[in-house]
Image 1: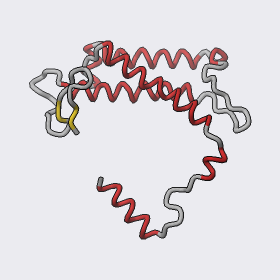
Image 2: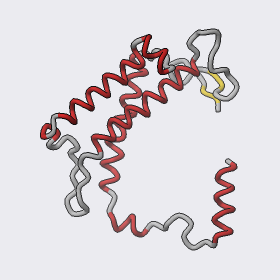
Image 3: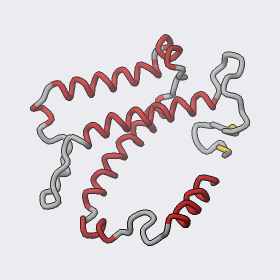
Image 4: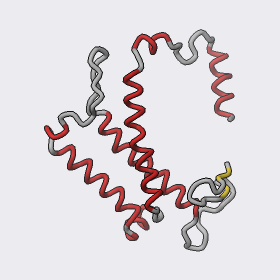
Length: 157
């Protein structure tokens, strides 16, 4: 997989380039830090998504509804957000967690990707239960030998 200079001037080969290059921050290190930051922020936003599930008849889209009823939840979320940003901004924590510094726009991009899970959650609530029931189950209508061969073909990719 080759990433050209399409984003933040990152230009390296993900497979062939070394992770550490003489104690200097490499673009591969920054890439992995961005992935780590995006993953952690998506988990934090997912905590908001999981607060309000709703029912098939009454779909609740406001994930911030009644968030102030339990004061521990916002305190924990804000604490996790602060700690996550501290991991990539303070040098002594970066060394401990193996992260590299991220620019403002990299932080902004990871935050936007994490907030995108709010949109995915709202779109999943728009999907009707009848439509989901009509979708075939994975491997439905196949015998065991066909299932194993298709699984092995997927794993070889």
